[in-house]
Amino acid sequence: MLQIKRYVRATSLAEAYELNRKKSNCILGGGVWLRLSNRRIDTAIDLSDLGLDQIEESEGEFSIGCMATIRQIERHEGLNAYTSGAVRDAVQDIVGVQLRNMATVGGSLFGRFGFSDLLTVFCALDSYVELYQGGIISLREFANKPYDRDILVRLIVKKTPLACAFACVRNTRTDFSVLNCAVSVQGNRALAVVGARPMKAACYEGELDESFPERVASSLSFGSNLRGSEAYRRKLCAVLVRRALEKAGGKR
Amino acid sequence: MTVTIFLNGNKITEDVSPDETLLSFVRSHGCKSVKCGCETTNCGLCTVFLEDTPVLSCALLAVRADQKKVTTLEGLPKEAEEFGSFLADQGAEQCGFCNPGLIMNAIALFRENPHPSDEEIKRYLAGNLCRCSGYEGQMRAIKEFVRWRDSNEQRQ
Ligand SMILES: Cc1cc2nc3c(=O)[nH]c(=O)nc-3n(C[C@H](O)[C@H](O)[C@H](O)COP(=O)(O)OP(=O)(O)OC[C@H]3O[C@@H](n4cnc5c(N)ncnc54)[C@H](O)[C@@H]3O)c2cc1C
Ligand code: FES
Ligand code: FES
Image (cartoon, protein in one colour):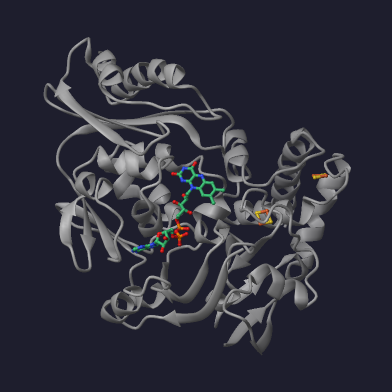
């Protein structure tokens, strides 16, 4: 059971960062994942008062505050127009509307969960995270960074011209993906990001030709768990990459 | 710490522990329609509105509802009874345990999207599990309710 001794609404990121340096303290995103843990937290640090729950769109990028919810990105017209619905496709089966009204983009990305559909879709885009101490780094670099005590302030998605799509397989509609995949295509180059392997999202980039889906499947590593075996996931991978490429606008 | 929560229109100021859930808070104030089913954010039984947005009270800390409006089924008697009678007519309540959470989320759906398609209904209510009904009766009830509401509105 989650136990919390003290709750603080941070009045600045500097205050939140100072508090979070202590190992027994913890940033609260939506708190949905944390709630399932068996932790004892000295101080839970709430970022709700810092105005970080908005999605801002400018000519060149989307800036998504860490406290924006998954439901906000699911419903954001600009983001879904730019990604041809790939962001919506990635998140719309995450449990239910009520959970998506609570779980945050910051908590989802900071967690770098193996099952994450968000990490997969945003890694396929030209995405960056702004960290309070670490500055702006690409999301793909962040995905492989060790956990530290920094704060993910916002996600930045550049409007780089590309075609993208998301595909996944779930045993039941609201379960974790057995495997998920997002692709983005620029000219004759494609990037495939595959998550829920069941390890976290991994990328493969290469020339887009007939063999691309099979090349992705043979290059990445997969594992087995209750939802599927390694061999099944490898087979699925080529199928999902092909489906996503078709959705992204071109049979390959 | 001390919080002030506007529960179904009543202002409640009280000391809560930092790890108390909103579920336990609303139940301790008599809102027994809000049930604890799974406690792992999977079943939707504990659905309440936080400032008119449906959320899972089993995963929300009561301290986060400070200065906010919280609504449970007890705060929406007319809407709940109207739609609930369609669930009963369609045999969509067997043990009835899931109904308060389902009714809350269905009300949220009707407010957000007054004319949902079958697919939109399924998707919106995917986080409301029912162990008894098989969901067919709930689907019929929602469609009948929308028809009835529309014809009522036309008459007025
Ligand atoms: C039952 C269930 C099913 C789910 N199914 C899926 C699914 O199918 N697909 C999917 O992609 N996701 C799924 N999720 C995960 C969910 O979408 C969120 O990613 C998850 O709840 C974390 O988001 P949160 O806001 O609740 O984070 P929290 O629980 O608040 O935080 C998670 C971690 O991140 C840290 N943190 C939070 N915000 C920040 C920040 N801004 N900076 C630094 N650290 C931070 C916290 O300290 C904590 O360690 C599921 C979750 C649950 C509970
Ligand atoms: S009790 Fe909250 S979702 Fe099941
Ligand atoms: S009627 Fe029994 S759980 Fe739904």
